[in-house]
Image 1 (cartoon, rainbow, N blue to C red):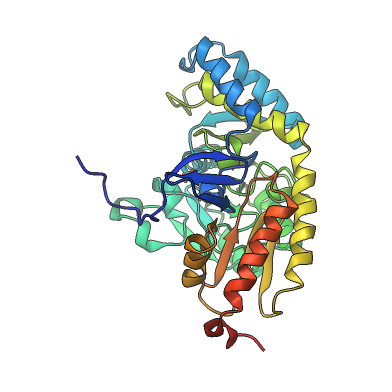
Image 2 (image 1 turned 135 degrees about the vertical axis):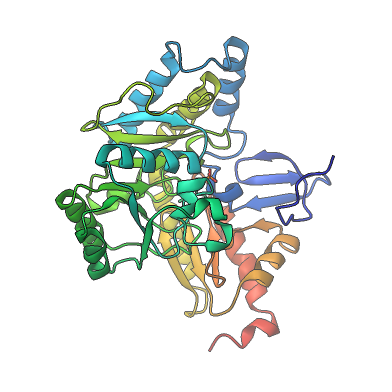
Length: 384
Ligand SMILES: Cc1ncc(COP(=O)(O)O)c(C=O)c1O
């Protein structure tokens, strides 16, 4: 049997990984500044993480959500404390799309409405409601197109007011920093306007923290920059550091109804132990603060690049916007300098999403390599 061919693949075969370094089948080391789509939060193969998973495997890996699971409750407790989101309840699932699907579903259950406001260049996943609120028609099949969605530009208050004033919207879903789209951000006044209008029109504010959560932006959740309180907070990626786990935080204003949401695998013992280990490492190693400090170091390094290259994002959720499309540059970084980076919908943005415990030396290694690529004659014409 062959694999279903939906992924363009790099010619690299990683066989082991440690921290921010991948080693391939030939023993070549790669600096991982992308974490496999922003998933690696505490670094590959962190010893506390791997030991916790191994120990849990020897006890019990899975049972369904029909029994008491103390690891789930311990996880919820720790997540509440570390994130500052004590006023929320936790529903566990397996991925970012599933987290958004459940959040949208809750918004519709709570309000009894079905229309959603989403933003241009958004990405929320590939399940039916999640892909319908994703601004990319090429990944929406006809079966996904029955949803009523209004896409408006980030920070367009007038369009937002107009969209909500009809009273038929169940949710506004927003990324606190757009990941796949290219690192654009809503302003604080805009986020506050969304919150106020959502309250006025009984609309659920969904802050999609699937990519920006778990310390990546230098805060536990990216929306915390803006002093708002979303109704629903979907999360995944860095939550499991590679173990497939996701979740939705649901404000305590809303009560659970038995049977309304559910999943077979979500919240299993092994996943919860992996996610708990991630929180323990984030706390123990003060990684959120480290992400902030590394952002400052990135800014220092940026000063030595041509002024036409703009730094976007916060913490270690970064984009470098170039005056040219970056596909060739990325290839060169990978195949010549052995550095993994990411692309965005905006073809001029290079995405940098390293493990939160990346070192200054590793960041410097990236900038040295980048300068070598930029110094090549074919790239000089873009700069003054
Ligand atoms: C903001 C955001 N939401 C949702 C998703 C979907 O997550 P998953 O691929 O785990 O379904 C992604 C994935 O990139 C994302 O960036």
